[in-house]
Image (cartoon, rainbow, N blue to C red; front, side, top):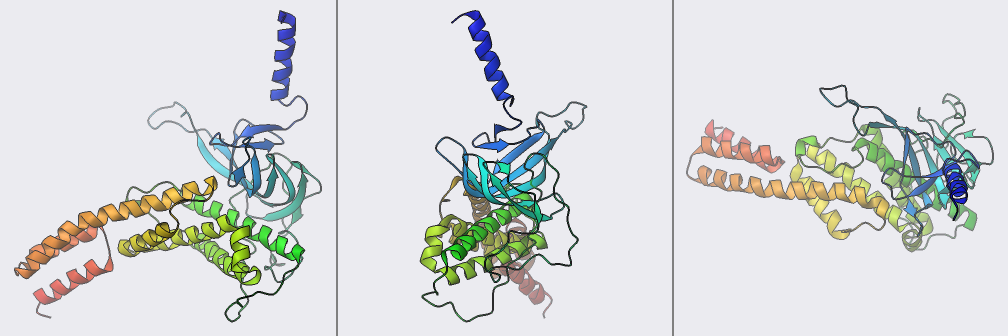
Length: 376
């Protein structure tokens, strides 16, 4: 190969890499594992994909594409920029990917939490964004966005950005008796819409819980576990109701075959709400019991997108189990002191056990000893 030929080939490759044949280009997600299409690439924009990827590494199937803006950060105690700045969620798209590009109906939640919908064809908008969720073929499938809400403006042109998602269309299940064992037949178009809606809402809520837990950062201290914000807990409760109604209308077998990973994700998110609430409420014992039951029935995630969530739950269970064993030593000492009539020593041991692994049973032991010491 001549030097001139090599120069021309290299130039062509560089032009292609920089989008010379169009403004868009493929880029890797933050974890470098998945390829997604970006219509207007910028150096300070990064993305994560909640769905699956095909054999060639392209995002595929239903999921949520979350875009972040990386803001420069300074190393503490210096003026030196850190190697990796702080990433701020700026927008989200939820829909179906084909070879890394959105193809079909897409829901866009902007930086203020306002929802829009539109259609993309091979990653390109086919029409203007329309305020509100995707239109329904069956009005009973979910509530519409309240007409009293402020009329949002369509998002500005640019790369597909997604803001912290807010569930503006929570599902309220119809009051009904126990679901029939054989649900009534559902029209294929309605069934497909129900499946897409359920997948979409699951991805949105998963992303919201991820944001509230620091991208499912593993737990190494009980005092780092915070109760989920009320709005996030409510979105999980709404999703649980949606899953219940989904199974009632389509049947358990259909729900399991069509949306098995989503159904499992709903159960995992519910476990997050319960365990964080229990730990924040000083009942680590209940949290440990619930986490153990869930992970016993669901030891491994079905898809890669679930792995951070499973690691988060597993880290909490392992921490609770370890601390419970440490607390047990103090509980045994407390019992021995109490039997010997050394009430003060027993109370101190119970208090130490509670500090390590708080739970109502230990609190009650302390109260009983305190009452007895006062002759009450």
